[in-house]
Every structure is written in C-alpha cells, then in structure tokens.
Length: 314
View (cartoon, rainbow, N blue to C red):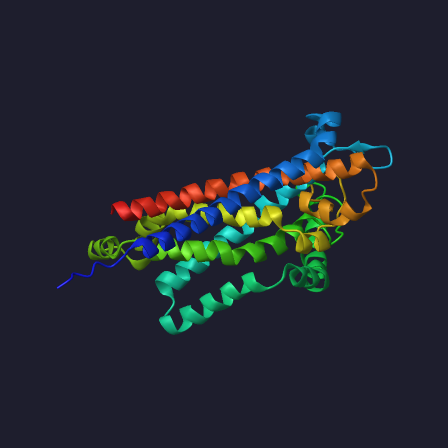
C-alpha cells in the first residue's frame, strides 16, 4: 500500500506570504513616523536656519515684522498641561480607589462606564461647554472674588478676571484626561496581588491602611505612567483649549490671564500663514510639540512596562 505523505509546499508558501505581509505591516508605522518627521523638519528648516535657538527663547510673535518666537506657546502648553494634571490626578486616583476598593459592584460598573464615556466626547463639544458653562462659572464664582481678595498679594491671581484664561484651559483639559488616568490607575490597582491585601488585613490593618500602605505603593509606578499618558493627551489637545484659553501670545504669571498653546497657534494661524518664513515658524512649533509629545509617551510606556514586568516576575 502506498503511503500518502501530505505535501506542505502549499502551506509553507502560505506561511511565507503571511510572514511577508506581517513584516510589511510592522514596518508601516516606523516608516510613517520617519516620513512625518522628515516632512515637518523640511518645512521647518527655513525657520531653524533663520532663528536658530533664539526661536525657542524669544517671546516676540509679529508676523508683520517677520519676528517669531515660540516661548509664549511653549510656556502656555507646559503651564496649562501641568495645571490640568494637578487637578486631574487626585480626582482620577480617588475615583480609581473608590471603584476598586470601596464601591459595591452594582455601583462600580456604571460609574466606570460613565467615566469612560467622557473619553468619547468630541473635543469641540468640550470647547462649546467650556464657553457657555465653565468660563462664566469660573469668571464670576472663582476668578473675580479671588482676584479682588488676593490679586494684589499673590501674582498667580493678579489682573482682571477675563474668564478666558489659563485656568479655564487647564480646567477643560483636566476633565478630558480624567478618563485616561483613572482607567490606568484602576487597572494597576486591580493588579495588586490579593495575598498582599489579605496579609495586611490579617495583620490588623484597616481597609484604608491597606489601600494607603500596600495597594498604592505597589501601583505607584503605573499611576505615574497613567498621569504621564494624560499629560501627553493634554499637550496635544487643540480645539477645546483653543476655545477657552484666550489665545494671547504673552507670558503672564497670573492664572487668570489669557494664554496660548502650541496646538492652538497651529489651529488658529495656519491658514493665515502667507509668507514662507511664517509658515516655516509654525512648522517648527509643530516639530517641537511633536518631539515633546513623543518623549512624554515614551516615559509613560517605560513606567507601564516596569509595572507589567514586575507583575510577571511575581
């Protein structure tokens, strides 16, 4: 009887084609990243050649006189983003602790779902809500009373209360990044080994002491990584903050003064850039923003990988 030996030629050919396709797909994103950087760098080169490092340190922005400096936009981006973190991180971590440690199951699921829905709201809707609800509230309920009481003593609160300000932009950003930070914080808190929780409770620790002294220290690198991911989201946000921050290219110590961000100036002035140097200056701002965002996300991923690797070792 003749033994039938199945042929694997067809299967091997299919595997080879499949492997080639996967390699092509895998190389697509690095190539796309390279071409984006290359294209933006080419467009920004006239500005880099004309202004060199003074572009980053100059606060002059006058397209008529062909004077361009990115410092007000860098300042506005950094201040608004870090102020948003100061607001969002405590709220996000508190929400994550509540959902993982305290809330009953029937309440935790709908609250977590509602929080995640915040990430699905378009940024322009946040901007419109900020214009008609948040800005008037901040102006009349917070900025004007604080400015009258402490404006002469504390530079952070000096000046008139415009409503459209750095504080308004940071408040909108904080609401937008809460879903991202709370989701990561909730996941890393749920990853805390059960035996560590039970050991702390068995030694007489209260539920709060177990959370504060066991769960939070274990999850801290992941929470920091989630905060940095939220920071990356805040740095690149455009429409919502453009609609509420005031869009004035000046550096002011007051949180009640209007500001400007790198993303906002790109959205507002890109269509008005008629001269080559004007357009090149905007492209250099885009290149700086791109670099900052990439570095922030790399830091976040490294922290998250650290938590993941530690979980695998345990």
